Length: 312
Length: 285
Image (cartoon, rainbow over all chains, first blue to last red; front, side, top):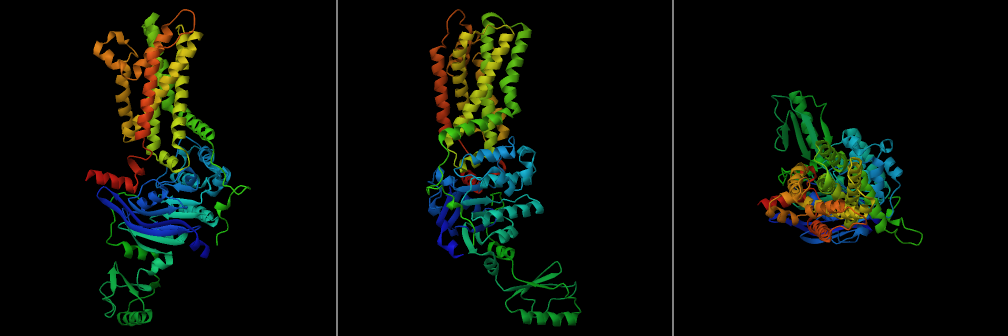
């Protein structure tokens, strides 16, 4: 972790972006260390894709400082582009080509490409190498996208919602492929709507809402930002009121009460007394830490949820 | 702790490996575009099937003899080249753009000139093949196409194909999506080729239309092809200099507009990014 902290693959400070009168980013700042995997999370329209497209060199920013692999992406040339890999938000492939032809074409653009067979193995498409891309399933095509992102041996890989539309098995296969890449030392910037994906893959999570960074920490630390240390959930039978001393802090929905607390023992005591008095079965009671999802909802509730398809 | 840092993948002398040179990237792009065209049914239709079918139809109808027949062969050869160089080429570029393929290419180390050159050269090669097949079929049907005419026919077809492929590349900037590509492309080239003497010699058209056609990109190409075919006699014919210059000028116009206005990113559909939509909203406001 110390090595990561020393060398920065990405450094962003005071980043602003406006389109006409619309302000998309307001002073965004964060850093990504070399070899780190960072997930950028946020609701639709929060500014995630604008941020990532500026980092990728597709957009010119309105203000602020951005350094990616030591260069300003808005000014960088071919050599810099050869050091990054892209997996765009939607599949972007030549459907008439075979998987091998497509990978070979892109490999030929880079100074130090991975062998195509190695990429095919990494993304789990060795058996489909000679099939036309148009005949592959959506999940397989997305894995070709991933293969194109890594075929140039990039130092930094941008993954923009890489597993959207995957079934659970395909998603787990893609995660394993990404984990293998991360283990090889690649720096990864990931945007995703799947918090489980961020929790599994990311060393750090940057939450963007309303064009600002509202959290920047490890997934576990961001989970702690949700507030209280423990979340208690217990069933409440119909016609039975909540425990009097806990009612003010609990929320009741679909016959389940949820309660956040920093001091668990008194709460459990109250609940045991209440269950004895009201003869409530507490076998299904759960106690847990707030998850990344709890934190994410707490951090972004009430902020811009877009309502449009503004990407990640 | 990460086990491996790819930045350490350097050559023995400590230098990062060099990017592929211009010849290599151009050849790769040329091969890639040619492969795409060879697998696109619309390319086979516009380059080979339609010109040959029209040639056969005119031959069977009997309206295909003498000087008028030679002009018709020139017109149909040009028609196949224009359809392929302009409509098929531009349709393919728009489809690639809207699928996000161009955005991905732009995001990598490929220099933009390599994409433009590779795609235009591949289309031009297909156009030359189209012209060859059309003229061979015309010869089989009785048209006099002399070996001495081949250099001039090659030069005229090369320039015509380059100019129409360049114009096709340029026009993609003004086509919003795949759905509107067909109608917009047809609306921009079909009237032009019809008034420029593809099927009916311009001599039968009103004066103002002849003047208008002479300023458009199809007429110099069609006229040059027909003029070479109608030369007859001994010696190696030369194409009319004015027509050659006209085609070359339109090629320059196409390249200029393409370089200024070409769009690499999808303009509609699922590939729209956040910033693109925000831009659209801002413009709407």
